[in-house]
Image (cartoon, rainbow, N blue to C red; front, top):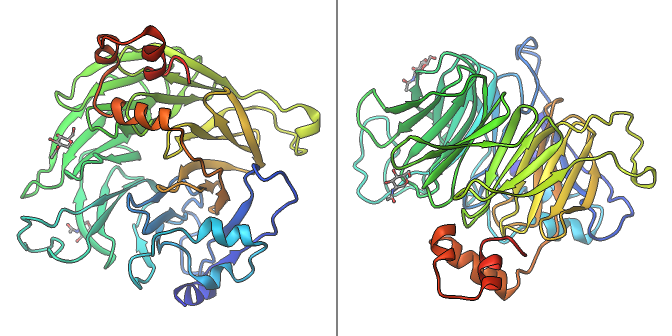
Length: 423
Ligand SMILES: *[C@@H]1O[C@H](CO)[C@@H](O)[C@H](O)[C@H]1NC(C)=O
Ligand SMILES: *[C@@H]1O[C@H](CO)[C@@H](O)[C@H](O)[C@H]1NC(C)=O
């Protein structure tokens, strides 16, 4: 129903599943912006970011032309009425219901939108204050990073603008909230700095810290799930790792041959991946700075080539799967790849033109991607049943650093497994 109304405005395009092996990601749905004429056609049309709320009930799409679409998740039945197969329904109709009959929202940001990040708005102890979300409601906020250096923070349920955060002098390329719900926000900008904001602060000044040190545009920032570390990636060959406790530089991660454009931590914070224009993803141990794996995006053998004439495999985006054993990458060679970290090889490919960003659904099962044309696509991804061994490792590594594991009185083989030297 909700989507019925929405369909009139935008064109949801469903595609038939190609005949391929069950592991291949296939296109579940594609959404394209159907823009009424009044929008500024000079403003760029790229989808620089897509995001799911941490609880999986909302999807945010920076759909170009200064607009962010907030879509309750999962997509309504109407959108999937042209379903190609049963698998499609299973894949996308996830176990969570979208924001309880919520309606989709269109946020007019007034500037090209680059970064997006959701956070829950804590309800306990929150006094109702002017202009702040009222306690008691199901509250979620979305931060949007804009072309002029501003960050606008919105209440998701109502689409109301809550704050403007000013400070950056150039494009706010990426945003990341501390996953513990503390309302600490990190922004990465073309002004070569990162800024830390505390949205729980009263009054106008919510800026806590400016992190300087990068010599080029900062493309990406990612806070570890345990909230202890921050990784930033910039147009230089090293990624920086910062402490979220002291806001100081822990180390530079040297290894890439070109700009580092994307980074992500594993769900237990024990691994970090960085992706670069040099066509490689490097998997690091963030505690020691060691390189554990290098995943090269080489041109495909002809039999698997989807006919693209572009082979420059510069990477655009990398993200971890929610169970922490797979990665998705988007590259300029028109492929979405899914990698098995144990095998060190891509286990699935899908043809994807003009890809810019990718993100896993927080409960797994599919991946959302955004393109230069302002489209979003939803792809099936293998749903993985983790081994008991891996579940134990994940639970332990959520609170043990690499050095703490190495100090345990356990056999060497077990240490190697727990520190991801083996899988
Ligand atoms: C934020 O800035 C816009 C102009 O960019 C202004 O219209 C709006 O009132 C401001 N909102 C808040 C909540 O400060
Ligand atoms: C959440 O994480 C932030 C960033 O590391 C930290 O400053 C804050 O104290 C943490 N809050 C809680 C409640 O753990």
